[in-house]
Image (cartoon, rainbow, N blue to C red; front, side, top):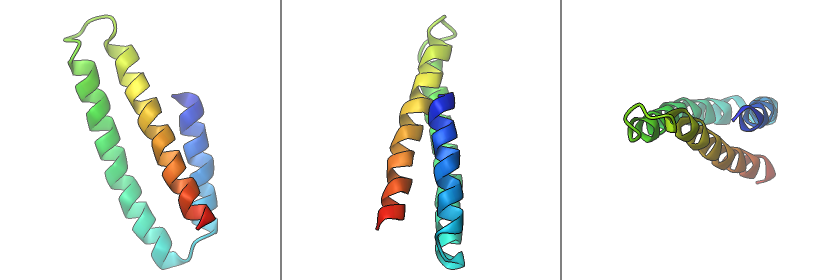
Length: 80
């Protein structure tokens, strides 16, 4: 997850400095909503293990997968 999160943060910096203010605000609002959804889905994934030893693994894996998907979306914004 750390690697995916670092990539996301680097892409976010590129978005910030390569979009106009209106576009940036739109993407920022989308990002905030996406973060809530990502964390909720990661919590749900962990909860499905009912506190078992695999819960933290599934939590981190869900966050990593969703973060990489978001990175692709942000990269697409930069290349459009």
